[in-house]
Length: 280
Image (cartoon, rainbow, N blue to C red; front, side):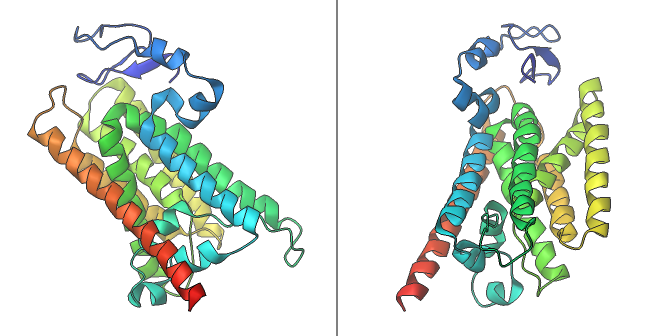
């Protein structure tokens, strides 16, 4: 993706350094020059200048760092998916669980390989977010991408809560599977060769992930499946962004804003519960 990008009008792949689409002829701007001027840190955090991917990645890493630095499971205890707590009023867990990962534990109470497993959990999720999310945001735009990611997280942990109500789970993989679902929907919406290729690749990766989840009990396959369905549904309903900022684009801008506010409200409620219960 560093040498090519998608035309916002016809969605065909074009050279990242060009200012016109070779397929439909519209002016698209020299996006490659903007990408080339990024610092190494900002280029990693915001690959290709993708805002939604960068902010989601930063939120996950910061929360993981806090859990590790404080050597506390408080965020996991109050923010993961657990149906009894959700039915008791902790609705926000269906969203916050998608941004939380267990911090590294060096207490020696568990197996020696546990810190490695905890690190691999967030590392693989963030790698998937960065790689797949960058493509989704390039194709669907920031607003649709964030709406699809939020819906996938919500749908994933809702299905997980119904499938395994007494099992606690957390992690960004439900949202990442939602991004795979969005690219599968892209293959339905667009008949281009690039779209079909991405669809096949994402179907293969999603299938491998679900098969692995069927053999590994620590993987929440219900969250993955729910996320895949949620991401596909939102991307399919949203369609591809239009070149003109019409009513449809404004509507999806509103949907994205509501998703962001709901996520912020969920974390506000999480931190309020943590401080309130500790103070009590």
